[in-house]
Amino acid sequence: MTSEKRNILCLDIGSGTQDVLYYMPGQELENCPKFVLPSPAMGVASRVKTLHAQGNNIYFYGQNMGGGFYRILKQCMSEGLSAAIHPLAAFSLSDSMDWVRNAGLDITEECPQGYFPVHLSDYDPGFWQGYLAQAGLDYPGLILVCAQDHGFHPHSSNRIGRFEIWKEFLLENDGHIEKLIFSEPPEKMSRLVSLRGSIGAGFVADTGAAALLGALFVPEVEKLSHEKGICVVNVGNSHTIAFLVYQGRVHGIFEHHTGLLDGQKLWDQLDIFKKGELNSQHVFDDNGHGCLVLDSAQGHDFVPTFVLGPRRKMLQDFNAEFLCPGGDMMLAGCFGLLKGYSVLTSQKLT
Image 1 (tube, rainbow, N blue to C red):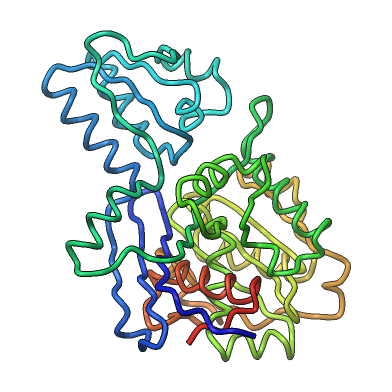
Image 2: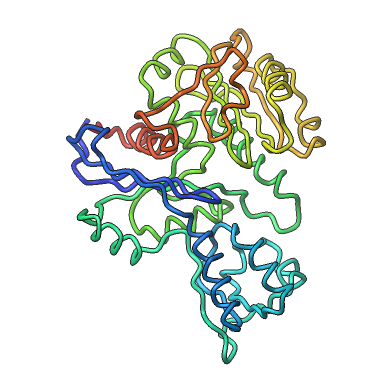
């Protein structure tokens, strides 16, 4: 086992913010630089508002990224903004080009005359080179990034498509946690594919996977997970996802939309989920994604429950322990990326 000596930039890209850890080998975690910045999608939304206020029309180009700017774009288009988009960038809004056209955008490989170009990307090397330089930090030798990926499925529900990715992880990879982070993501994870191309060298993961790995970054939690089954729950702003974990494997996954849950409803569903009795179709019919528990979960109760996420207080009245990986809950995904990278590559991070 070797030690990683390069500085590592870890990014957890959400819909509203991107949470950032600049990991420096040999430095105490508490002294590694940390940032919480607006997400790239929020930067695009701000640019759209500014250009529209100036009376300009917009041409989007670039690649697949988070579509969190669409609400502002839709509002501006209702006020008279005309917008066009490059075919590759159009996947930021939908896997279906018909949907993009029906939303009012022209799909074209050339920027229409008089339109202002706006670049789409979850990761912009120029931004990070400038930002880190202003902070007195060198550009890193390695980049780890997570973002939520629904997969590519233009002719079916993205709720079904996203959960199919989790099912494949459980059924084809036997839930081994090192399979949660990628040097080369599967083609169907189109957003992560674009991200991996943007960073040049590094590893990518889904935000749900990074949250789980963030919980296992806590030594006491990882140790307990090898002694008995545990449940890790990430209550995000948009998605709530839970994992049943034992001895380095995930034995079950449940994912729902946070806005459709309250504390009691979530706790009741988690209780049934831990027993392997939660019906996936029931979750889907409730506008969630689904659940799957492997036969290997039998014989374990997964009672110890650890909670992460910005809306974790939903479970504050229940028998669950709140985690703070690396001393900063908002950076749980970043610490999870470090954990996943160390497991996947057998690198010892000091």
